[in-house]
Image 1 (cartoon, each protein chain N blue to C red):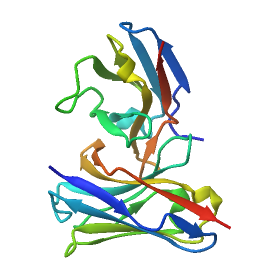
Image 2 (cartoon, one colour):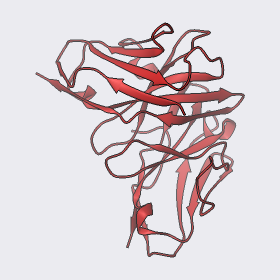
Image 3 (cartoon, chains in turn orange, yellow):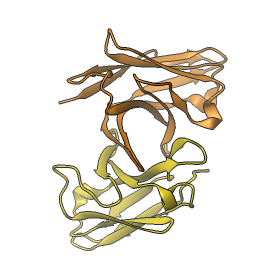
Image 4 (cartoon, one colour):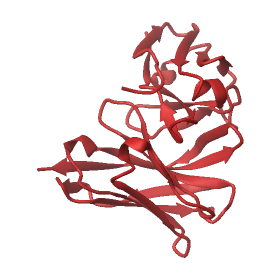
Length: 122
Length: 110
C-alpha cells in the first residue's frame, strides 16, 4: 500500500524559501502511471493545487504560483520536493503531497499524505 | 476565490439525503472528469468519487456522484453523524493547465 509522508520546517521566515519533501513508500515515483502533486490549505479555507512532478516529463505548476515554485523529484530516494520562494504570511497553510492519476480527461488524487503545517513569520 | 463554486454549508438530519453542488465552466468541468474528496475534521482529504461517478474500493454506495454539462453533484443518502466533514470537488482546468478545486462545503448532520 502506497504511503506518503511530508517533512520540512514548520516555521519559515518571511521572504525566505519554504522547502518540503514528500517521501513515498510502497510504490515508486518512477512509475509512469502517476504524477506526484503538492496541495495546500490555509486554515479554514479550501484546497489549492500547487503543482505536480512527473518522472518522465517536466513539472506542471498552477499559474498563480508558477514564478515562485519549483517541484522536483529524486528517484534514488523515492521522494519529491517543493520549494516556494519569497514567502509571505499568505503562504501559511497545511501542505499536502498526493499521488495523482492522469489519463485522458481523468485526473484525481487517490493517495494523500497526512499534511504538514507551515507558518510564515515576520 | 475558487475556480469551482460550492455552497459553503449544507445540513440534514440523520438518515436523510443531502446533495452538494459544484459549478464550473467549459474549460474545467465541461470537458474533464470531476472528483470529490471527503475531509474529516483535522485529517487529510480522502478520495470519495472519481471520474464523475466512480467510487474507490471501500467507499459505501451511500455516496454517489453525477455530472451534467458544467456542473457536478455529490449525493449522500442515509446520512450518519460520521459523515460530518468538509467535501471538496476538483477537476482539471484545460485553460489553466492545472487542477482546480471548489471552496469546500461543510456538511452538518443535525
